[in-house]
Length: 120
Image (tube, rainbow, N blue to C red; front, side, top):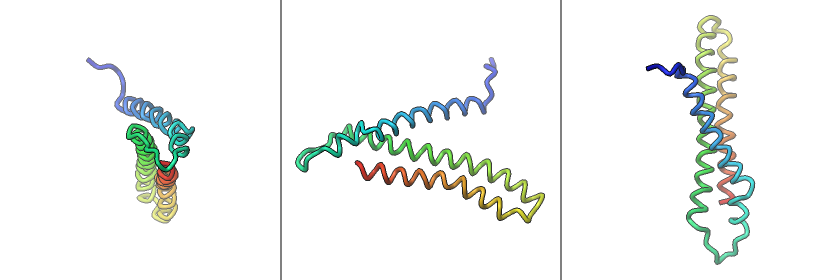
């Protein structure tokens, strides 16, 4: 029995749900749910493993979504760029630049991860 849902739309729905989970995790981290508790500790106090685990989960989800977005962007730019270069080889430099702009999303993800890890 066919449900009538295309594979592309199913993948899109999974991506949207993952995006909402990532946004919740990263915004709760950034809003200070964990950072305020971690910054206000004295030298003798220990951070519970649960707080660190949730903070690391938020960091991982943030970078995972950045890498996934970069991969989707590179896939689109690379496949379209390959067909464009096949027709007009003189635009190969422009195609490389556009693909590099999609890769910049992952670099921004790394910067966010470094900033978040400095608070843990």
